[in-house]
Image (cartoon, rainbow over all chains, first blue to last red; front, side):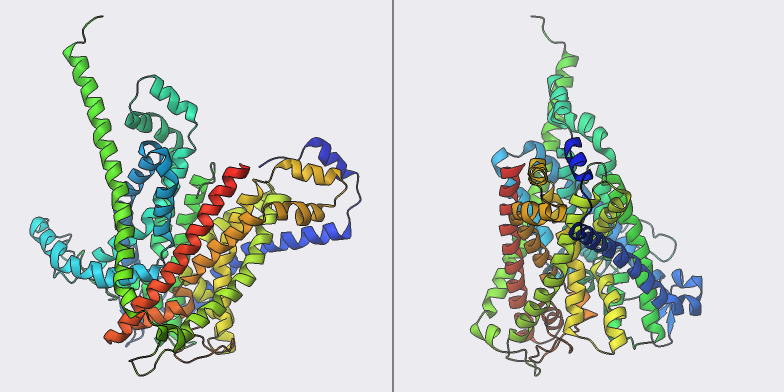
Length: 323
Length: 289
């Protein structure tokens, strides 16, 4: 940001504050305040609304594995598990690809193609999430069930189960479930990771890169030897930004996760995420009911988790203020 | 010239090979990204175009399950996105002006900037739940205006961010010049800075409109959806994303077809807004930066 020059400052300083200026500044200040108030009130409203659930089920609400609207017993762990597994898998799939795209766009791609390709990748981010949901449900899930999952089962069935309740790839290939949800999420967060990583890489001073090339480094060596060490924190920021997106994504996940609010027993298992449970159960939740309180409690948990992840992302990205 | 030892040659070859392989993988990654975009667009056009007819735009959603169009959903979306933008865009602009022209690097401005960046990628489902608690639950009814408020809260941080970014591109000389001519601070902003950055701010608003037009999750909690024609802001109101959501999950082939057509309409609209605003934003930045 450009600083007001000393001469200008002294000019302003000699004038008496005018009513129009004061009210102008106050209204702008108030607008800034609204932003902070909105975030604080989301947190407060979720907490107050979910308080009944935390009071009824205690702090165990967070790690209870039963979610049963019939008996009015609500525990958040199945939804939390589904959220974390899908989001982390999505990151593992999307990060290498997004990183590759970013390196391609900054160093390998012909200059003339940079802007159009960059816009094309950003268009992926603009497609409404409900369209991703329909694509996942009508195209990807059947393809996974018929082609990918049977093959994966055959190839990886030797992996021993985790404990006696999680069987990795040994399960019925249903199509909808954790794995398909992770893949759809991966495609959705890919453009965010790619665009942010690209901006981070571009922020490395050209002089550093030129130095590496002058020493005879290849493009890949200049990336690993100069660019990555220079912007390591911000690169992690891009990952956390993608993770934050994946944690809270709703409509795409509702379509493909299978909406079964129980602990998953394989990577194919129909499951649920916090956001999908909230969107799915909301139409049945009566105002004032314990079910609505449980949903708001889930919302509170999601808010705290995604706030933490996004705050970390912003802190890591702050130096360059990317994305 | 001395001949290179075999070790040096081997190392040189290895380094070149690593560069080629990793570069090739990165090209492959970019191809994957483009293929994904192409796959999704191809699917939308191949399935959506089949159902495109005049009925889609002229008839309301039918409650019987066959026939009918999306007219009330399209109008409902236009109303809610319109009102949402009219509330969210001015607020976002004010926040952006505050950050760039008044708060700058002050502690409060840093907080606002940080919080705004978090709101920018906060889960939209939580915005919906929040507006349900403050604007639906107390009045005992879902309403179009609640949907518009939720969309406004989603548009505000987008506009704030782009406004601040674009105002930073306005040369400092403009501000100094205006003050030297005796302008007051509010005049500097209103008569010099904002007109100079008008194009950029407008494209930022278009981006925000594109962002909220496709939002589904927050509307489930606020305007609910409506199969009948209704423009009453205090009643549940239809919207294109909700109609797509309902129809895509229905067993009727006709309704699923309508969902594809709706998805095509909304995606084409959103992507066009994006292309126009991104291309013009890039041109503006080149011109001023």
